[in-house]
Figure 1 (cartoon, rainbow over the protein chains, first blue to last red):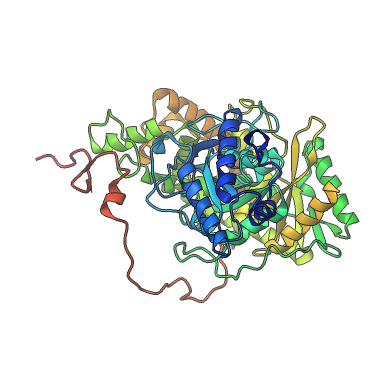
Figure 2: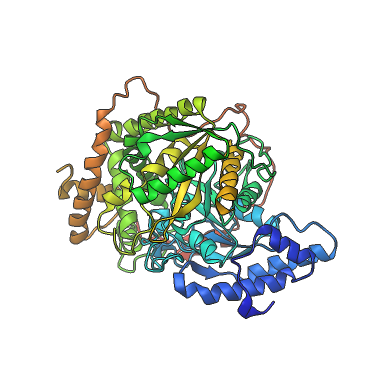
Length: 482
Length: 99
């Protein structure tokens, strides 16, 4: 295989495994080429912030050694994987997209990182993202925006924009992102790939830099549903380092099962009011496909949807204001050179270090938690969260899954929406509902707009029913690519 | 207006952010827009609704208690490696108490 012909774009977990076992290439050769390809292509998108050649080649050599000894090299053997830069990697710079952490070298690995490397996965590098995962366009990164590989003048979505872009661009086969209110699903939809937000607690958050702890998830990106399921299989499961990680046994997500006949799919009509037709049309066409595959489609109601964005932005910013208090100029971060007193050290270091969006969210979160406003905002939002979670519980008494849009519009131009933060928040309406309820949800590619921009369809199921979500996604994927 | 520049300065104080004058004005405008939308929640009657702080699942009460066993902690060198200013294995900050 020559370097000039090399591309990750056609590769899957299976094709790499087959190549390794047929001795078409070694994991080390494959990794060298994947790195060279990714480094050459990266200037187009700015999706990788850091490459990890030494770590990647060590991982690859250990895969080769296992194969040589006749041992099982693991379910992700030799697969090039990128990791969002809010997930810590021991000895490998982890910036969170922030100037504050521009030189931060974590002393430990996130559990998800440990698990994917134990499974033979090869981490090529760390991906760009909105600062501390706050944003929907990747324009809030201190290291410049990521460009969408599908249309380079457009955003890839956010906050996991880099992780979505590398998989869409073919500079990684898989990647890890994080999702608090849509940060995996929305960029997956903008870039035309699969992105999974598992059940809250399904994947350990240990080593995921905290944004809003009751809403944060780690999840996979992949070009095929099967590969996304396989990556989730590896990273899912109880971890004693995260007390909120779930005990529920992890079922086999990877068993082939494309039969969706008789499954009941709910379509929440309130999600389609005011949706641009180019997006709505694609999703309704996908619903028709599911009908043809034998699903029974029903209208359902999620009546508290209009309150979800307000509820989300109170809870997420309140938690963020507490979580981001640790960046104080002492432990993790650069300290302002102007600071003379302790108080100035805190204030100036934080003001110099955080970007506008982080400051806005810290301020909003501090405000809603402050004396006299706690009951009216924070406590109220927690009660509304209960109502939103109940909407889903009632819906899942009638249906096996819900199909919905991911974003009201496809990828927009870089710079187009930066001056109206409130409008940007409102666009999170279809993703924050599932996040608040903690249910599994994923974005599956469902065609393109007349302009050629990808549209994603969201599939949501009950807590811990990722199996049903993947089954529907895979059946749709198969039907739409045939 | 839901929030004015004086409120912004008070909240910035609580959040330990030293905002510039220009940032205060911009923040007041942005937060006002967001708070206008957030006020929508007051339309809902939530009396008798339990607040939801966390997504919870059924598990044994003792489930999250792990076995008590010895393991190596983060080393001192690792713990202070990313700090801005250190001295003798400690974090160093500006003088807090005047003699």
